[in-house]
Amino acid sequence: MKKIKTINKLLSSLTLLSPLAGVGFNNQYQNTQKVITENNNNLWNNYVWNQTNAEQRTMGDVVVTVEDTKITGYVSSTGEGKLVVDSDITEISEYAFRNSVVVKGIDLSNATSLTTIGNYAFDNCRLLTGSLIIPSTLITINRGAFSNTNITLLDMSNATSLTTIGDSAFSFCIFVSCDEPLPSNLVTLGNNAFSGCFNISIDTLKIPGSLVDLGENAISDIKYSSIDVDKSNPSYSLATNLGPDAYVLISGTDGLWKDDSKSISGFAAGDIVFPKNITFISNNAFANCAKITSLDLSQATSLTTIKDYAFSGCKNLSGQLQIPANLSYISNTSFLNTNLTSFKIDSNNQNFSSATNLGSNAHVLLKNKSGQWDYELNNQIVTPFAFGDIDFKNIEGSSDKPSTWTILPNAFENTKIRSVKFQSKSNLIEIGDSAFANCSNLTGDIYFLNSIESLGSFVFKNTTLDNLFFLSDASPSFGVNWKPNITGKVHLLSEESKLMYLSEENFGFTENQIFVDAKPIPTSKSNSILIIVLSVCLGIPLLLCILFILWFFFKKKKTTKKI
Image: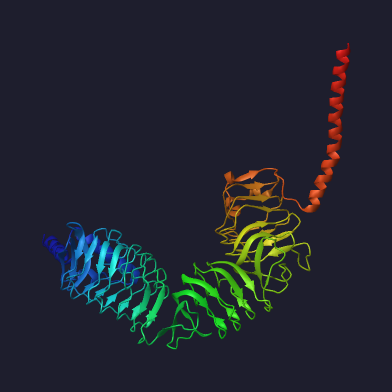
């Protein structure tokens, strides 16, 4: 009996120590479990059982748990769900309200002691809406604090003490608007801080003098027309040599964008004109600068290199790209996901040419001066500079195998080609990995004829075609996820095709997507002549036979009439 009383006394004391007895305990346990999982160490004893100063308190419409002067979690809502933070609260702890459906609004007008909002404190509170007015005492908004919420107004006009906005702090707050997203004393703006905030629209992005640490893509989705840098800023300046309509924030205070400079991703707008002295454009230099509208390289006579992802994601970059005389290297990803529509090569450029043997409606930039795309020269397409309808009928083979040729890996990846034709005598034997991946404009039918031996991995990743046609009796080898999406069928033009016996895992198509037929295949000119000759040879006897039957019928009818 004594042992039972002791146990009951222990359980009773543990219940008293718990900051969330009853219904609140489950919520606190979930938050604690999340912290323990992400930090990968045992915080249980310190985080829950030793919270001797924990209490439940009603703040506005929300019942919260408070330890000393920190809000550590929530219990329930007693009304409309608006959280009104008390004046003695100094911190809202990490994960305190994460994924909550209880908090529907926040009032910080009485939070005169609040200095910190912790990591993911209100993350994914989908019912959290209305205004968020940052008080003058707040110093830090940590990583993901308000990400994925539905707040509609962010007011930082009184946020005079705010120095840090952490990574993804307001990411994907799609409906939020804000007049001044960068407070006057801000020092650090984290990566992706305002990414996905598509509703924030301002005339001028003001860079305060205190800001020395800018994260990548921090405001890449905010709409703005120009950039203004406070003259007292010790780390950044506005480029003065990239055109009168260009606004490019750069590291350094001299206002010059040099060959070894890197622009800050997400902080460039307008029409960019590169001057004569630029020789090198770095990796990611202007990546995801959605505000860039045009690019002029005609004056960049010293430019030799454009590196990986230099202009990738500049979705409003359109029009024609000039290839200056000395440009010798463009990465396959330099202009990924842009809307450039054509290119023009300086007549003195000895490194690039436009393909002349891939069809009259094809526009393809090549890494050579011959204008020929063939296997022996090991040509590769410079993405995304391929447009139109690609026809491979004039492609020549290699010197050791003059009748066969190969499309190299990544050859047309991410390009804007519309259609592809493989002629029956082209003897294409292999298509390399990702050769036509992400060609979103590619449509129509594609025929694979007798010669095809290998289709690499991800050949048609993220493309959609109408129909595929296979003539080969043999079974080509297929790489991982080689197939496109199709709106029609996979046609096997031979009833003996071994493709019928491939597993769905290897071939990639289900049985109901495969159709066996005898549909004619596109023919070369010589085959067309042969068909015409055969038609004539077979057609003349048939015509004579028909004429004889008609003559016999009318003659018989005439004889019968006389009788």
